[in-house]
Length: 236
View: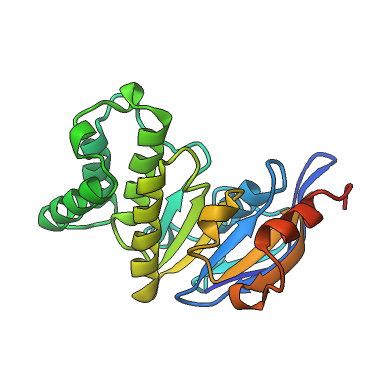
């Protein structure tokens, strides 16, 4: 469902993503781990079609993201690095806008919005403008927008960062439910304790490269130990 082959992105002389290759099968939840600056967000931006690769290739749902049109974008649920919220829209207005963009009926949008507002503990703040929301509320609003259409593929950049522990448990449940219905999910994160409870496969990225990967059931030691060993090394 998601396939990267020798994917590379340069910004001038700086190589942000360096020759990355991996494949995420349909209905799986994979986690791309690594410290800030490892290249995780840049990788997700290329998969979402927001940034063209310098070289190599990416195929998402059978299409080249950098060349695909609006139909491709509607097959994705994306939680971007900058959240992409509008300061003068309320939380629930963001969800209504999302439903319209994805072609959901008003009834579908309202029903799905009510479910997500409840499960993500946003009901009390539903009429609050984004500019007045805490960063945690903004993060949950953007996540609700990604979840609302139950897309075929989800690309989630740091979905658990600044989210309170109770909401994090609910997010894990939501992701597990949507994956069980066939959605493919790729999460970027550096929050190991949360991600290890939901992902079935882990990749560690450092200095733009994948330096380690394993299925969840194939890890001999703790994920914390492996992560520290890999990211604590010098430049790749």
